[in-house]
Image 1 (cartoon, rainbow, N blue to C red):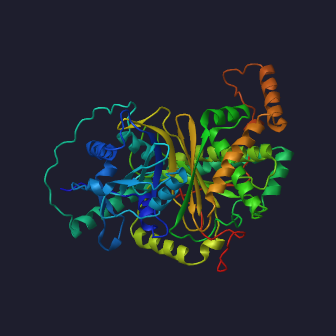
Image 2 (cartoon, rainbow, N blue to C red; image 1 turned 120 degrees about the vertical axis):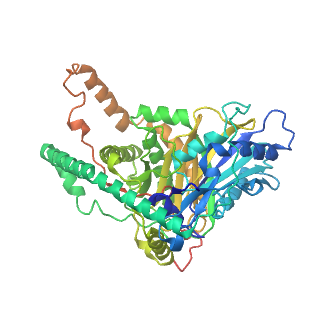
Image 3 (cartoon, helix red, strand yellow; image 1 turned 90 degrees about the vertical axis):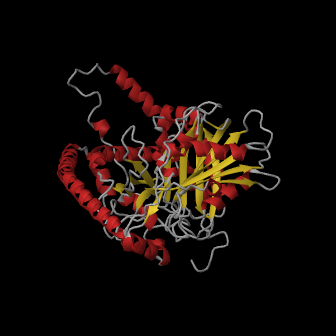
Amino acid sequence: MTQMKHLSIVDGAFLHMESAEMPMHVGSLNLFEPPAGYSGEGYYEAVKAHVSKRMHMAPVFTRKLALMPFDLANPVWIHDDDIDLDYHVRYMVLPKPGTFEQLEALAARLHSMLLDRSRPLWEFYVIEGLADGRIGFYGKVHHAAVDGQAGVAMATSMFDLTPEPRAVKPPREARANAYQLGVAELLAAALQNQARQLVESLKLLPALAKTIAGAARDAIAERRNESAEDRAARKAAAPGSSFKFAPATPFNHSITNQRAFSAVSLPLGEVKAIGKSVGASINDVVLWLCSTALRSYLKDSRELPDKSLVAGVPISLRQEGDTTANNQVAGTLIDLGTEIADPALRLKAIQRGTAAMKRQMGTFRGVIPTDFPSLGSPWLIAGLGALYGRSRIADWLRLANVTISNVPGSKVPVYLVGAKMTDYYPLSIVVHGVALNITVQSHVDQLCFGLIACRRAVPDVHELGRQVQRAMQSLRALMATPALAAPQKKEAAVEASRPAPLAHEGATPKRARKTRSPRLRVVPVVQAAAPAATKRKTRNTAAAR
């Protein structure tokens, strides 16, 4: 009997929304120092042999899609015992002079091409010819197969912690099997899966009702106990604050199939230290760096909206230790405070938003479903995706301006067939209506930014990358900002003078826990969704827009 694994509703959505203009794979561009004794030849063959020995360690390498009859339900994953490694692992050489900008352009072009759905949905490229002697490595895998955290787990099957590859247990000898799934078997499996998902969804209802009731009680209690100052701030922000559209930007239009990519590295240790000194988390600082860069980028071309830009931020629902190769994500919308000129006040606004996000996710994380009945979803999602992309809906239905994602990476050096990785730049997804995606991944002592965009919407994405670097300079200046430093000193003094709490007392006053986001809401997410297309108004703007 052929083993089948059903795609969840989220996994399937990445397949059904995909089009030539909107590929739904995620990837990375890595740079490696050549292995010891490298003579300029043979590394590609060594990588291909290495991949051949490791494919059994992650299911994504050896499974492909089997479609349901008439697309009645999501496809299933089945094992593929005929992998063509010459197709999946390829070799390329940059033309002279072999600049990093050429490598970025090549990665953007490779990232714009669809994966072949008749094969396992992944590809690797070994890229040589860089002037500095390093080796490039670009890889991509369909988002239907992995989310960000599962992708990191998948990478561990390929990379090692020492230059000498670790010994791995070989796979069991595959049994010859020419069995093909029949229509009746596929339909029966689909109906069984729908019934199972219906039961699981019904089981969640009591917990969901209890959670909503508890959240409502907490909100009522908070309203009763709020100060006059908090009440005035809430009333001022109340009109339409929950359901506002994001402002119009060059990023919010339908996109083309062409991509532009920029990679930026910042010192992780310094970012963490500065964030800690001003009381901000690494996620707060990443959002602030992106907000500062976007503000400067749009202001330079006189396209900065009066209202705050909104970021779609994916939130992982994955439990610790879960490395299942599927998507377990939701998402939230956070105001970036780009209308605030003062850097310190902008950071505080972002912190209020992320604090509210954490409270909401802490409340609802356990009851947000990652799968539910999906009968007919291929038709519905594909139809809605085509309508959204081919109409002008993306021009006015703006929930977010940009997607920003922060994924923790390896804290220690990793190697691929003896070559040491020096950089890990993520490339994610851009979608109709959101033509810019900024994904950030840490790697050892670096914070690596991957800015991927529709080329028509952001033709000068490298300028945005330079603004990220300038934002780092502004971040250094924040350490001396009185608006941030003084409150912390005051809080530290108050904390030092406060008597130790009794065992039944809380250490944090009730007032201090009450923070508000200018705007925040949790929504289902397509991880790494990104910007929209159309040239910038001040740079060869198309009249059709």
